[in-house]
Amino acid sequence: MRIITAKYIFIDNEYKENMAIAFNRKIGRIDKLDILKKDFNDAQIIEFQGEVVIYPGFINLHTHLEFSANKATLKLGDFIKWLYSVIENREELIKELDNNIIEFAINEMLKSGVTTFGAISSFGADLKACAEAKQRVIFFNEVIGSNPAMVDALFSDFKIRLQESMEYKSQKFYPAVAIHSPYAVHPFLIREVLNIAKKENLLISTHFLESPYEREWLESGKGAFREFFQRFFNTSTPVTTIQEFLNHFKNIKTLFTHCTQATKDELEFINNHNHSIIHCPRSNRLLNCGVLDIKEVKNLLLATDGLSSNYSLSILDELKAALFLHSNIEPNSLALNLINSITTNAANALELKVGKIQKGYFADFAILRVPDDLKDKEDIPLHSIINSKVEAVFIDGQRVI
Ligand SMILES: [Zn+2]
Image (cartoon, rainbow, N blue to C red; front, top):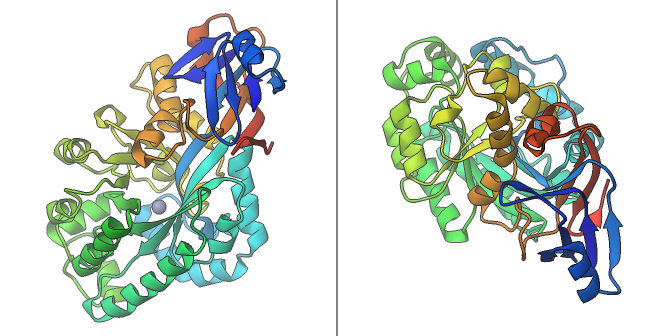
Protein backbone atom coordinates (compact mmCIF):
# COMPACT_ATOMS: atom_id res chain seq x y z
CA MET A 1 0.00 0.00 0.00
CA ARG A 2 1.14 3.58 -0.68
CA ILE A 3 -0.28 6.80 0.67
CA ILE A 4 -0.73 10.02 -1.28
CA THR A 5 -1.69 13.38 0.17
CA ALA A 6 -1.93 17.05 -0.74
CA LYS A 7 -3.63 20.14 0.67
CA TYR A 8 -6.86 19.39 -1.19
CA ILE A 9 -8.44 16.17 -2.45
CA PHE A 10 -11.49 16.30 -4.71
CA ILE A 11 -13.93 13.88 -3.06
CA ASP A 12 -17.69 13.85 -3.64
CA ASN A 13 -17.42 17.09 -5.65
CA GLU A 14 -15.81 18.91 -2.72
CA TYR A 15 -12.28 20.00 -1.93
CA LYS A 16 -11.50 18.11 1.27
CA GLU A 17 -8.54 19.16 3.42
CA ASN A 18 -6.33 17.12 5.74
CA MET A 19 -7.08 13.90 3.94
CA ALA A 20 -4.98 11.21 2.33
CA ILE A 21 -5.51 8.20 0.09
CA ALA A 22 -4.09 4.71 0.63
CA PHE A 23 -3.82 2.82 -2.63
CA ASN A 24 -2.30 0.04 -4.66
CA ARG A 25 -3.74 -0.34 -8.14
CA LYS A 26 -7.03 0.67 -6.59
CA ILE A 27 -7.98 3.03 -3.80
CA GLY A 28 -7.94 1.11 -0.53
CA ARG A 29 -8.92 3.78 1.95
CA ILE A 30 -9.46 7.52 2.34
CA ASP A 31 -8.83 8.99 5.75
CA LYS A 32 -6.71 11.46 7.72
CA LEU A 33 -2.98 11.11 7.03
CA ASP A 34 -2.04 10.24 10.66
CA ILE A 35 -4.59 7.45 10.79
CA LEU A 36 -3.49 5.96 7.48
CA LYS A 37 0.17 6.24 8.53
CA LYS A 38 -0.62 4.31 11.69
CA ASP A 39 -2.66 1.64 9.95
CA PHE A 40 -0.22 1.18 7.07
CA ASN A 41 3.06 1.84 8.90
CA ASP A 42 5.34 0.53 6.15
CA ALA A 43 3.55 2.44 3.37
CA GLN A 44 5.52 4.82 1.16
CA ILE A 45 4.18 8.36 1.63
CA ILE A 46 3.85 10.67 -1.37
CA GLU A 47 3.23 14.18 -0.15
CA PHE A 48 2.73 17.24 -2.36
CA GLN A 49 3.59 20.55 -0.71
CA GLY A 50 1.80 23.85 -1.26
CA GLU A 51 -1.44 24.57 -3.10
CA VAL A 52 -2.01 21.24 -4.77
CA VAL A 53 -5.25 19.44 -5.62
CA ILE A 54 -5.56 15.70 -6.14
CA TYR A 55 -8.31 15.06 -8.66
CA PRO A 56 -9.46 11.73 -10.01
CA GLY A 57 -7.77 11.24 -13.39
CA PHE A 58 -9.54 13.28 -16.05
CA ILE A 59 -11.70 11.60 -18.67
CA ASN A 60 -11.92 12.71 -22.30
CA LEU A 61 -14.53 10.53 -23.98
CA HIS A 62 -14.52 11.78 -27.55
CA THR A 63 -11.56 11.98 -29.89
CA HIS A 64 -10.63 10.75 -33.38
CA LEU A 65 -6.97 9.74 -33.24
CA GLU A 66 -6.96 8.53 -36.84
CA PHE A 67 -7.07 12.16 -37.94
CA SER A 68 -4.12 13.22 -35.79
CA ALA A 69 -1.99 14.07 -38.84
CA ASN A 70 -4.26 17.00 -39.62
CA LYS A 71 -3.18 20.52 -38.78
CA ALA A 72 -4.63 22.71 -41.50
CA THR A 73 -5.54 20.29 -44.30
CA LEU A 74 -9.19 20.13 -43.28
CA LYS A 75 -11.32 23.18 -43.78
CA LEU A 76 -12.63 24.90 -40.68
CA GLY A 77 -15.37 27.51 -40.33
CA ASP A 78 -18.31 25.60 -41.80
CA PHE A 79 -19.45 22.03 -41.15
CA ILE A 80 -20.32 21.13 -44.74
CA LYS A 81 -17.09 22.57 -46.16
CA TRP A 82 -15.23 20.63 -43.49
CA LEU A 83 -17.09 17.44 -44.43
CA TYR A 84 -16.19 17.83 -48.11
CA SER A 85 -12.58 18.36 -47.11
CA VAL A 86 -12.66 15.20 -44.97
CA ILE A 87 -13.90 13.14 -47.94
CA GLU A 88 -11.29 14.70 -50.19
CA ASN A 89 -8.32 14.35 -47.84
CA ARG A 90 -8.99 11.42 -45.55
CA GLU A 91 -6.90 8.93 -47.51
CA GLU A 92 -3.96 11.27 -47.54
CA LEU A 93 -4.33 11.95 -43.81
CA ILE A 94 -4.52 8.25 -43.02
CA LYS A 95 -1.45 7.63 -45.20
CA GLU A 96 0.51 10.24 -43.26
CA LEU A 97 -0.54 8.67 -39.99
CA ASP A 98 1.93 6.53 -38.11
CA ASN A 99 2.18 5.30 -34.54
CA ASN A 100 4.42 8.24 -33.58
CA ILE A 101 1.76 10.74 -34.57
CA ILE A 102 -0.92 8.87 -32.61
CA GLU A 103 1.38 8.43 -29.60
CA PHE A 104 2.10 12.16 -29.62
CA ALA A 105 -1.64 12.88 -29.54
CA ILE A 106 -2.21 10.36 -26.74
CA ASN A 107 0.67 11.90 -24.80
CA GLU A 108 -0.77 15.38 -25.18
CA MET A 109 -3.91 14.13 -23.43
CA LEU A 110 -1.83 12.49 -20.71
CA LYS A 111 0.13 15.69 -20.05
CA SER A 112 -3.17 17.47 -19.42
CA GLY A 113 -4.19 14.91 -16.77
CA VAL A 114 -6.31 12.60 -18.93
CA THR A 115 -6.11 9.04 -17.59
CA THR A 116 -9.06 7.60 -19.53
CA PHE A 117 -10.00 8.51 -23.08
CA GLY A 118 -12.56 7.41 -25.63
CA ALA A 119 -11.24 6.92 -29.17
CA ILE A 120 -13.71 6.80 -32.04
CA SER A 121 -12.06 4.42 -34.49
CA SER A 122 -13.33 4.44 -38.06
CA PHE A 123 -10.73 2.18 -39.64
CA GLY A 124 -8.89 0.44 -36.80
CA ALA A 125 -5.69 2.30 -37.67
CA ASP A 126 -5.39 3.50 -34.07
CA LEU A 127 -5.96 0.10 -32.46
CA LYS A 128 -2.35 -0.77 -31.69
CA ALA A 129 -1.42 2.64 -30.32
CA CYS A 130 -4.54 2.68 -28.15
CA ALA A 131 -3.88 -0.82 -26.85
CA GLU A 132 -0.36 0.29 -25.89
CA ALA A 133 -1.40 3.62 -24.37
CA LYS A 134 -0.60 4.36 -20.75
CA GLN A 135 -4.18 5.48 -20.21
CA ARG A 136 -7.35 3.46 -19.97
CA VAL A 137 -9.03 3.47 -23.36
CA ILE A 138 -12.63 3.06 -24.42
CA PHE A 139 -12.17 1.96 -28.01
CA PHE A 140 -15.31 2.83 -29.98
CA ASN A 141 -15.39 0.81 -33.21
CA GLU A 142 -17.45 3.00 -35.48
CA VAL A 143 -20.05 1.84 -37.97
CA ILE A 144 -20.92 4.14 -40.87
CA GLY A 145 -22.93 3.63 -44.07
CA SER A 146 -26.37 4.65 -45.24
CA ASN A 147 -26.46 2.99 -48.67
CA PRO A 148 -28.60 -0.19 -48.46
CA ALA A 149 -26.49 -1.89 -51.16
CA MET A 150 -23.37 -1.50 -49.02
CA VAL A 151 -24.84 -2.35 -45.64
CA ASP A 152 -23.82 -6.04 -45.50
CA ALA A 153 -20.21 -5.32 -46.48
CA LEU A 154 -19.96 -2.48 -43.99
CA PHE A 155 -21.43 -4.60 -41.23
CA SER A 156 -18.89 -7.37 -41.92
CA ASP A 157 -16.05 -4.87 -41.83
CA PHE A 158 -17.34 -3.49 -38.54
CA LYS A 159 -17.54 -6.97 -37.01
CA ILE A 160 -13.97 -7.76 -38.03
CA ARG A 161 -12.69 -4.53 -36.42
CA LEU A 162 -14.73 -5.15 -33.30
CA GLN A 163 -13.36 -8.70 -33.06
CA GLU A 164 -9.79 -7.46 -33.46
CA SER A 165 -10.29 -4.94 -30.67
CA MET A 166 -11.84 -7.61 -28.42
CA GLU A 167 -8.50 -9.40 -28.38
CA TYR A 168 -6.98 -6.54 -26.38
CA LYS A 169 -9.77 -6.39 -23.81
CA SER A 170 -8.44 -5.72 -20.31
CA GLN A 171 -8.89 -3.40 -17.35
CA LYS A 172 -7.01 -0.80 -19.39
CA PHE A 173 -8.74 -1.37 -22.73
CA TYR A 174 -12.49 -1.57 -23.26
CA PRO A 175 -13.83 -2.39 -26.74
CA ALA A 176 -17.01 -0.44 -27.48
CA VAL A 177 -19.17 0.64 -30.42
CA ALA A 178 -19.95 3.93 -32.13
CA ILE A 179 -22.82 4.61 -34.50
CA HIS A 180 -21.62 7.47 -36.66
CA SER A 181 -24.79 9.61 -36.80
CA PRO A 182 -28.48 9.63 -37.78
CA TYR A 183 -27.68 10.78 -41.30
CA ALA A 184 -24.85 8.37 -42.09
CA VAL A 185 -25.99 5.01 -40.70
CA HIS A 186 -28.75 2.82 -42.12
CA PRO A 187 -31.36 1.73 -39.52
CA PHE A 188 -30.52 -1.93 -40.22
CA LEU A 189 -26.92 -1.31 -39.17
CA ILE A 190 -28.04 0.61 -36.09
CA ARG A 191 -30.26 -2.25 -34.94
CA GLU A 192 -27.62 -4.92 -35.56
CA VAL A 193 -24.84 -2.99 -33.87
CA LEU A 194 -27.02 -2.17 -30.86
CA ASN A 195 -27.91 -5.86 -30.57
CA ILE A 196 -24.23 -6.74 -30.41
CA ALA A 197 -23.62 -3.97 -27.88
CA LYS A 198 -26.44 -5.26 -25.65
CA LYS A 199 -25.26 -8.86 -25.90
CA GLU A 200 -21.62 -8.04 -25.18
CA ASN A 201 -22.38 -5.24 -22.73
CA LEU A 202 -20.43 -2.65 -24.73
CA LEU A 203 -20.52 1.09 -24.34
CA ILE A 204 -22.18 3.05 -27.15
CA SER A 205 -21.44 6.45 -28.60
CA THR A 206 -23.04 8.40 -31.43
CA HIS A 207 -22.80 11.85 -33.00
CA PHE A 208 -26.15 13.59 -32.85
CA LEU A 209 -27.45 16.84 -34.35
CA GLU A 210 -24.06 18.48 -34.70
CA SER A 211 -24.82 21.02 -37.43
CA PRO A 212 -27.83 23.02 -38.67
CA TYR A 213 -27.38 21.20 -42.02
CA GLU A 214 -27.94 17.86 -40.31
CA ARG A 215 -31.17 19.03 -38.72
CA GLU A 216 -32.46 20.47 -41.99
CA TRP A 217 -31.67 17.27 -43.91
CA LEU A 218 -33.27 14.95 -41.34
CA GLU A 219 -36.36 17.13 -41.08
CA SER A 220 -36.96 18.01 -44.72
CA GLY A 221 -34.41 16.24 -46.95
CA LYS A 222 -33.19 19.68 -48.00
CA GLY A 223 -30.22 21.99 -47.64
CA ALA A 224 -26.50 21.49 -48.16
CA PHE A 225 -26.65 17.83 -47.10
CA ARG A 226 -28.97 17.11 -50.03
CA GLU A 227 -26.30 18.13 -52.53
CA PHE A 228 -23.71 16.21 -50.53
CA PHE A 229 -25.77 12.99 -50.53
CA GLN A 230 -26.70 13.34 -54.19
CA ARG A 231 -23.09 13.82 -55.15
CA PHE A 232 -21.49 11.05 -53.09
CA PHE A 233 -24.31 8.57 -52.46
CA ASN A 234 -26.74 9.18 -55.30
CA THR A 235 -29.65 9.68 -52.93
CA SER A 236 -31.79 12.60 -51.90
CA THR A 237 -33.74 11.01 -49.06
CA PRO A 238 -32.56 10.74 -45.47
CA VAL A 239 -32.51 7.19 -44.06
CA THR A 240 -34.21 8.16 -40.81
CA THR A 241 -35.95 10.92 -38.91
CA ILE A 242 -34.70 12.46 -35.68
CA GLN A 243 -37.30 10.72 -33.53
CA GLU A 244 -36.87 7.34 -35.26
CA PHE A 245 -33.17 7.59 -34.58
CA LEU A 246 -33.67 8.46 -30.91
CA ASN A 247 -36.12 5.59 -30.49
CA HIS A 248 -33.33 3.08 -31.15
CA PHE A 249 -31.76 4.16 -27.86
CA LYS A 250 -34.80 3.91 -25.60
CA ASN A 251 -33.47 0.99 -23.61
CA ILE A 252 -29.74 1.33 -23.90
CA LYS A 253 -27.51 3.87 -22.20
CA THR A 254 -25.64 5.91 -24.81
CA LEU A 255 -23.20 8.80 -25.14
CA PHE A 256 -24.65 11.41 -27.51
CA THR A 257 -21.94 13.69 -28.88
CA HIS A 258 -22.50 17.37 -29.78
CA CYS A 259 -26.34 17.83 -29.76
CA THR A 260 -25.68 21.49 -30.55
CA GLN A 261 -28.81 21.60 -32.74
CA ALA A 262 -31.06 19.52 -30.48
CA THR A 263 -34.30 21.05 -29.25
CA LYS A 264 -35.28 21.25 -25.60
CA ASP A 265 -37.56 18.23 -26.10
CA GLU A 266 -34.81 16.17 -27.68
CA LEU A 267 -32.42 17.07 -24.88
CA GLU A 268 -35.12 16.08 -22.42
CA PHE A 269 -35.54 12.72 -24.14
CA ILE A 270 -31.80 12.15 -23.78
CA ASN A 271 -31.85 13.23 -20.12
CA ASN A 272 -34.88 11.09 -19.29
CA HIS A 273 -33.38 7.96 -20.78
CA ASN A 274 -30.30 8.10 -18.63
CA HIS A 275 -27.99 9.02 -21.51
CA SER A 276 -25.10 11.48 -21.38
CA ILE A 277 -24.14 14.30 -23.70
CA ILE A 278 -20.56 14.83 -24.80
CA HIS A 279 -19.79 18.47 -25.37
CA CYS A 280 -16.88 19.50 -27.61
CA PRO A 281 -17.01 23.32 -27.51
CA ARG A 282 -13.88 24.08 -29.55
CA SER A 283 -14.83 21.70 -32.33
CA ASN A 284 -18.40 23.07 -32.39
CA ARG A 285 -17.09 26.61 -32.59
CA LEU A 286 -14.51 25.85 -35.28
CA LEU A 287 -17.12 24.14 -37.47
CA ASN A 288 -19.68 26.88 -36.77
CA CYS A 289 -22.18 24.40 -35.36
CA GLY A 290 -23.68 26.53 -32.60
CA VAL A 291 -23.45 26.28 -28.83
CA LEU A 292 -24.91 23.44 -26.77
CA ASP A 293 -27.29 24.72 -24.11
CA ILE A 294 -25.49 22.99 -21.25
CA LYS A 295 -28.03 24.22 -18.70
CA GLU A 296 -30.47 21.73 -20.25
CA VAL A 297 -28.11 18.76 -19.96
CA LYS A 298 -28.40 16.34 -17.06
CA ASN A 299 -25.13 14.44 -17.44
CA LEU A 300 -22.65 16.65 -19.24
CA LEU A 301 -19.27 15.31 -20.41
CA LEU A 302 -16.59 17.56 -21.84
CA ALA A 303 -14.32 16.25 -24.59
CA THR A 304 -11.80 17.55 -27.11
CA ASP A 305 -13.00 15.81 -30.29
CA GLY A 306 -10.16 14.97 -32.70
CA LEU A 307 -7.41 17.01 -34.29
CA SER A 308 -9.63 16.89 -37.36
CA SER A 309 -11.63 19.73 -35.80
CA ASN A 310 -9.47 21.05 -32.99
CA TYR A 311 -5.96 22.41 -32.46
CA SER A 312 -5.02 20.44 -29.34
CA LEU A 313 -6.12 17.42 -27.34
CA SER A 314 -5.40 19.07 -23.99
CA ILE A 315 -8.46 18.77 -21.77
CA LEU A 316 -7.25 21.85 -19.88
CA ASP A 317 -7.44 23.84 -23.12
CA GLU A 318 -10.97 22.51 -23.61
CA LEU A 319 -12.01 23.52 -20.09
CA LYS A 320 -10.75 27.05 -20.73
CA ALA A 321 -12.67 27.32 -23.99
CA ALA A 322 -15.87 26.03 -22.37
CA LEU A 323 -15.50 28.51 -19.54
CA PHE A 324 -15.33 31.43 -21.97
CA LEU A 325 -17.91 30.10 -24.43
CA HIS A 326 -20.74 29.77 -21.90
CA SER A 327 -20.70 33.37 -20.80
CA ASN A 328 -24.35 33.18 -19.69
CA ILE A 329 -23.35 31.07 -16.65
CA GLU A 330 -21.67 32.41 -13.51
CA PRO A 331 -17.95 31.47 -13.80
CA ASN A 332 -17.40 29.78 -10.42
CA SER A 333 -20.36 27.44 -10.67
CA LEU A 334 -19.60 26.77 -14.34
CA ALA A 335 -16.00 25.89 -13.45
CA LEU A 336 -17.14 23.31 -10.91
CA ASN A 337 -19.63 21.85 -13.39
CA LEU A 338 -16.89 21.57 -15.97
CA ILE A 339 -14.56 19.81 -13.52
CA ASN A 340 -17.42 17.41 -12.80
CA SER A 341 -17.92 16.87 -16.53
CA ILE A 342 -14.49 15.24 -16.84
CA THR A 343 -14.64 13.35 -13.52
CA THR A 344 -17.85 12.48 -11.63
CA ASN A 345 -20.25 12.77 -14.58
CA ALA A 346 -17.97 10.62 -16.70
CA ALA A 347 -17.93 8.04 -13.90
CA ASN A 348 -21.74 8.02 -13.99
CA ALA A 349 -21.76 7.54 -17.75
CA LEU A 350 -19.16 4.77 -17.85
CA GLU A 351 -19.97 2.59 -14.87
CA LEU A 352 -16.27 1.80 -14.64
CA LYS A 353 -14.28 2.41 -11.50
CA VAL A 354 -12.88 5.69 -12.82
CA GLY A 355 -13.64 9.39 -12.38
CA LYS A 356 -14.03 9.40 -8.61
CA ILE A 357 -11.79 9.28 -5.59
CA GLN A 358 -13.60 6.55 -3.76
CA LYS A 359 -12.72 3.22 -2.19
CA GLY A 360 -12.52 0.46 -4.81
CA TYR A 361 -11.94 2.87 -7.70
CA PHE A 362 -8.75 2.71 -9.77
CA ALA A 363 -5.89 4.77 -8.37
CA ASP A 364 -5.91 7.15 -11.35
CA PHE A 365 -5.10 10.71 -10.29
CA ALA A 366 -4.60 14.07 -12.02
CA ILE A 367 -2.70 16.29 -9.63
CA LEU A 368 -2.85 20.03 -10.27
CA ARG A 369 -0.88 22.85 -8.72
CA VAL A 370 -2.92 26.03 -8.36
CA PRO A 371 -1.44 29.49 -7.53
CA ASP A 372 0.37 29.81 -4.17
CA ASP A 373 -1.59 32.89 -3.18
CA LEU A 374 -4.99 31.22 -3.49
CA LYS A 375 -6.93 32.31 -0.42
CA ASP A 376 -10.47 31.00 -0.79
CA LYS A 377 -11.31 27.34 -1.32
CA GLU A 378 -14.27 28.37 -3.46
CA ASP A 379 -11.84 29.69 -6.08
CA ILE A 380 -10.21 26.31 -6.66
CA PRO A 381 -12.35 25.12 -9.60
CA LEU A 382 -11.88 28.35 -11.53
CA HIS A 383 -8.13 28.46 -10.90
CA SER A 384 -7.82 24.77 -11.71
CA ILE A 385 -9.04 25.74 -15.16
CA ILE A 386 -7.39 29.11 -15.83
CA ASN A 387 -4.29 28.99 -13.69
CA SER A 388 -3.03 25.49 -12.98
CA LYS A 389 -0.14 23.26 -13.85
CA VAL A 390 -0.19 19.47 -14.02
CA GLU A 391 2.09 18.39 -11.18
CA ALA A 392 1.74 14.62 -11.55
CA VAL A 393 -0.43 11.94 -13.12
CA PHE A 394 -1.03 8.45 -11.73
CA ILE A 395 -2.64 5.55 -13.56
CA ASP A 396 -3.28 2.19 -11.94
CA GLY A 397 -1.35 3.39 -8.90
CA GLN A 398 1.78 4.15 -10.96
CA ARG A 399 3.15 7.64 -11.47
CA VAL A 400 3.33 8.27 -15.22
CA ILE A 401 4.05 12.03 -15.14
ZN1 LIG B 1 -16.64 12.97 -33.43
